[in-house]
Image 1 (tube, helix red, strand yellow):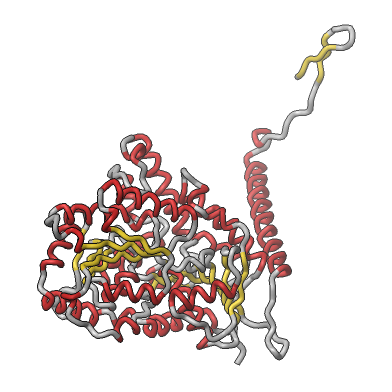
Image 2 (cartoon, helix red, strand yellow):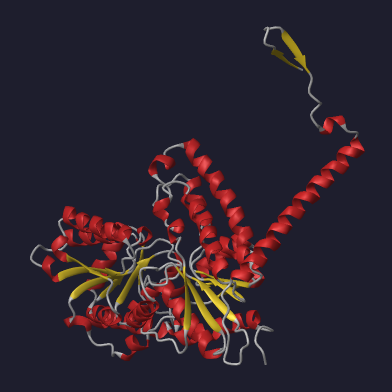
Length: 505
């Protein structure tokens, strides 16, 4: 009932028909209505999927061979293919291996590097990694890479970047629907999109899980870290809320990851976490990343007594690399050195800067070095070439690595191959796969905090050159399992089922 007033201000009684409600129906009718509603909803979802799939296929770019037949497309989702890090080496060697084995397959890269031309990107790959592709690679440039930038999401970063990756993946899918799709940067939420909307065969190469049991543990134990702000770790309520958020995210991450037919991981550490989260042991394989160490191994291992007492850090300037720990450890080491000898020691931080965010970190590190009073003993080398990288490695005595739970650590392998004494973080890939005993002999040193790093630096510099040489020789002998040839063999073996029945005889 509703009451209104006419022009004479006398009230009028107005009647409305009864609103439809399940309560007005009998129980059998309620059941029928609910079934109808569920089936209607499922039909609409299925219709939307079919429509989007057809729409994507109609918009998709198609490649033809000389005989006028459609080429099989093998697409790599790597929005930062021009970054110049270890993940990019995996990308370029993977493409090269596909082109060598399957020359009729058209390789495609979904790239967000709109500020560079294809020739510039390929030129950087040659310069940085000494890799030249035997065939043509097609680039699909994505305009919305900003959706996956961490800086866009100061809070709920994992969720924001993952949802952002769906926006980027939709742009990619509507530009080109590939026959085979492989995510090589860790955007697992793109996998169901390409499998169900694109109808592609789907695989992934995981460098580092987006979320790990270690991250859950940090929040649960209220440990402050680069991914767990101190104001959250200090609050029991906020910590519990974040733990719930992480667990829900881990569940969704698991559902997305299971969409891959082939799952490749780069280390034992990553394997343990991915199999725990995704529960797909039968499809998960360790494929060590390719390390181009041939040119390093070609150089003879000489007595390093005449080398500069130089420590070299190689790696992108990302927060998880923990460059501040390197500066603090070096400062602590120098504080115990006689003042007359401090000038003998140098720390070089070399690596690539991807964008302004990385450059800001470098400026912060330079300021920290100044505050610690070691800025005259610290050098920064940014975006160096492969030749410069080799020169730095050959003239350094120690290679330094400080990332907690590094998924693998290509720079660790390169340092060992070049004949430096490796000092790496006591966790992740370096601990489980790389800096391990070889023939019952040590291959380097592991540390975990400022004190242990400073102590290891002191130990290495105080060793005799013959003692260091024994470690360097053992390290070199241990790294053959990380060669490019080994990577290509295993990668192609796992990709073969994806391409089966797609290639014409």
